[in-house]
Length: 401
Image 1 (cartoon, one colour):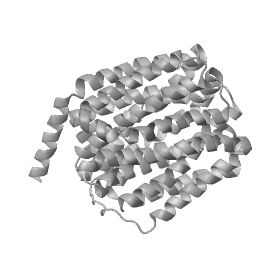
Image 2 (cartoon, one colour):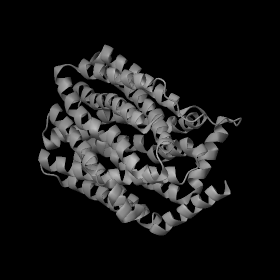
Image 3 (cartoon, helix red, strand yellow):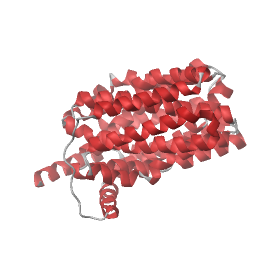
Image 4 (cartoon, one colour):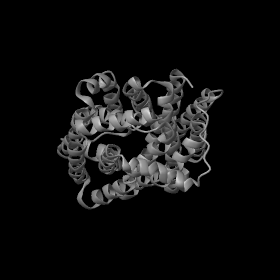
């Protein structure tokens, strides 16, 4: 697979995911306004990262990665078809099932595409390539998709779901005839394969510290996002279309920062880039907790927050790709997500319960406190010295091979 083809596939696949992920919470609000029930859609939607990530990593390392990516789009197409055919008539149970299946497709697709990047670009282009792919998957496409999905819900929920189906099928069509590096055979039990990947991840101090920081940040972000649709409508005062516009502000932050992230990382280095980005996450949670009833203010906060989050994510993903042997990369990438994103369901659940008891803004105060913990990890464990030591260890392995 070429870098250009991977980008084109990512655009179409992310458009389908973006349509469904925007549609699900809006459908949930149309069924119930109970914060705990609405957040349950996000809780169930995050479970596959905890339940399937480790086994997905084994599949990514043992099968052709382009085939795994194609399977993820097939699953996405089935989910879109179910939502288009049934929609609101399925009630909350259908939304929970679709949320679970869509995220399962993400587990496979994100892991496979991340493992494909080092195959199609050189080590010196990892930061810029990861930035481009992240912008495509979560920036450019979702800058357009959320407002369209919000508008489509106002006209009829089926339009967004059918659109997601078309996007998934288009991604599948573009995958036809592509190939990646041959699969690495293994006679080991899959559990031993998983253990091998986890041992490397946990045994590499820099990668473990990144996973711990992401776990804390993911808990906080999941709590915030789980009730954001209610926060936007009740605290900020927007309608469905306005909610989509606020989500588009987050995507606009990704797009804007994508033009500068490579230069910033080269200038500041990985350590200071990640420290500054994590500090921004703390400040954005505080800003949303104190925000006036102003869509413009909240939109600016979301824009700035995700611009800095892109820097963190590029450095985080590039670090795993730089410091992990290719034969372990799929398992390390998905192992990181299982460890780091495994707290997402708990974060979403905690956010919903706290909002129901103490109000929506209390969730952002809780998120700020948790993000301070992640900042402490970034500050003390992700030092310039830690990155130099990781680079020396990777160079030593390359010489040994």
